[in-house]
Image (cartoon, rainbow, N blue to C red; front, side):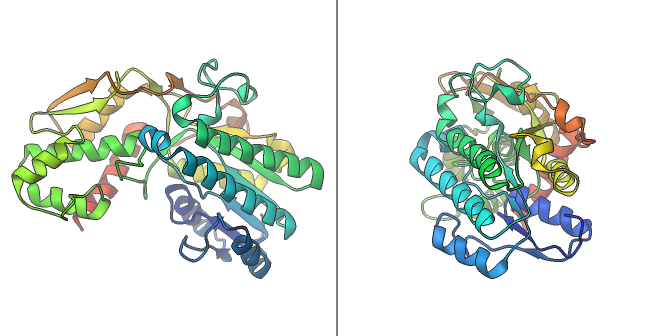
Length: 353
């Protein structure tokens, strides 16, 4: 990918990762980037994907599209998660082979690793024991995508690589509490808690209207109605209640750091040099409890944080071994607190305007 006018297709360009890859490519001077919204191209429909590839003939593909979510969404929409992610991967990877794509980068997830795998997680730990039950459907689909890339490379001589990032966050994150991951969910809930403590019902109503999880009858400025609604998400005037024990450890990577890594790989490396897949992470983790306290500081929430131990924690720890990607000249640049500050600033701007 060394010609600035090479045709590049980003699948999932509106998502957090895809939009960051798009910005990175444009900043690096690439001028021939194609993409489609979900309304324009449903990647779960094979014929539609084949038609798109036949017409556009992209030379390089970033496969960033996926159906994603946290523990609640993964546990609730199990069939959707495995079906949609399997179909997206199979359709895009197969069409890339059929229409001569020179190089493809498939974006996976660290949830592919076994629940009880040793920490930090090395690439060779894949499929060595059982997966975490709360995200098994998504993990199976992502493992299948890795294997698709590997076996197409082996049988057809393609140049398809896979990367496994840790938990991601940043601009264009998903703040819908039914489908969001832990960090954006914490940002939104603690922002609500601050607004509720300030009796700022106008901005609570605006937030509900902008990001969803709205009142059944639409936005309302009625204090009692709003307070009751937020309490259903564990947000109260005097405290906030979060899921689990707060003890699981998680690693977080700012999305713009990931896009720097994947563009580097596409520009300078081939699948044979990357191997079956390669981890991309920050190299250190923190407990969910400490994360919540950090988000509270950034948001400016000074109330109590309580933990509902009847709710699931998920996998105890997910820390990636990043020795291989660091050996290729990449390291994460954005500290967790600085990344949270940037993400919260963008979220508040979007929520209020």
